[in-house]
Image (cartoon, rainbow, N blue to C red; front, top):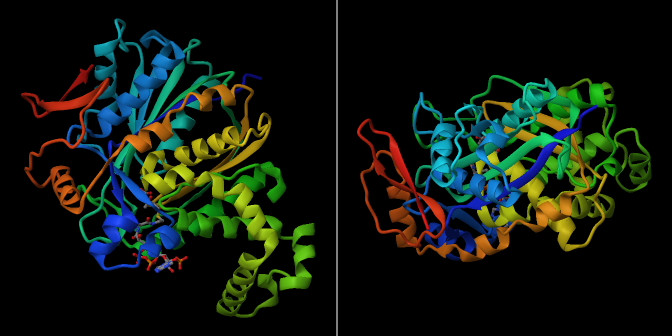
Length: 445
Ligand code: HMG
């Protein structure tokens, strides 16, 4: 059977950076460790005044196509996942195609284009669409370009402000992929929730604390659904577990929940029993609240065990390296987590070919999805071609005054024109407005 999955990825970070412990925390009168240790973030990436979801997406896609030696006719679909769109009709993928056509001789007239919306999970849903299109045999040998791009900005003063970020991930989905093959098995956990939404507004309305609980509940449901077809999962089965990462502290909670679930009725639970007892079972309790309290106590003890901490350090922590420096990229976030572990594997000279990932995506509103991936032979070459570290190091470090100006400049309700802080180089930039209110873009050499 044909293997289908991600052949290549490219990452494009916003060109600016907000230092959370150094610049944000003092202004908020907060302990810097709330950000570095609590949320797990050092910095957020920000778009400069000439950047937006189109430029970041097109820049990531151009790097990818250029590196892989692709021409427009090699691409049969362009799907953009975003929750930062500025048009309710014309999809961002048309703008991205327009940008790319400025630098290629060919065009994308025969490529299907669309835009996917379901909060942060839309990036993974677009992967799915591409996978299904290829598996159905409708791709005529062509690959799909999936672009997850967002400017994840919150209203000034919102609790989510510390978790902002901006960037894009471009992925090439093809037959016989070089990076990872996607599993046919997948599980969903989905319910009508109002944890985070943007009812025709740019900045989200967020019930932050509840959103954390909804994330965990839907993720557990998705894992159970995945296991109903893939069989019970065991912590040793997966080399890494990249989760949607709104901030690393969220993944700390998801990792613990996933571990507790996976070790139930295994030799790991047996081995830990002498130290922390066995997991509470619902059947042993008459009262749901008492059961939940017992579970919380078990989790608190589990978290402190060496067995769990070793597993977390090996399986989860390496997924968070890039996220710590960029914040939440919404649709791109789980794909950044995957890139982060593969980069860790490369830097530590690990032999990962054939190893499995369990990938947990989430979007508010809400839905979680779990599937597995198998790392393919070409992963080293693909990940070795990324220049994420250089991009992160080149970002302009915003002062507090800069930050306030930049935030206003990206606020659709404000008409603020500011000087860019950086000079674009070999990239697409926003170039003003057209006669019908459309955005214009140009490539700067
Ligand atoms: P908050 O009230 O600012 O922070 O909001 P907190 O007081 O809850 O503190 C955060 C953590 O830092 C806590 O750790 C504190 O204990 C710790 P926890 O107890 O949770 O493990 N802390 C410290 N640690 C060390 N030293 C200190 C210190 N002080 C505190 N001095 C909140 C946090 C998440 C609510 C906020 O950031 C928020 O509203 N964020 C936006 C919503 C969000 O990201 N939700 C995540 C789940 S939903 C999701 O992922 C979907 C999303 O990506 C959107 C989409 O799908 O489109 C958001």
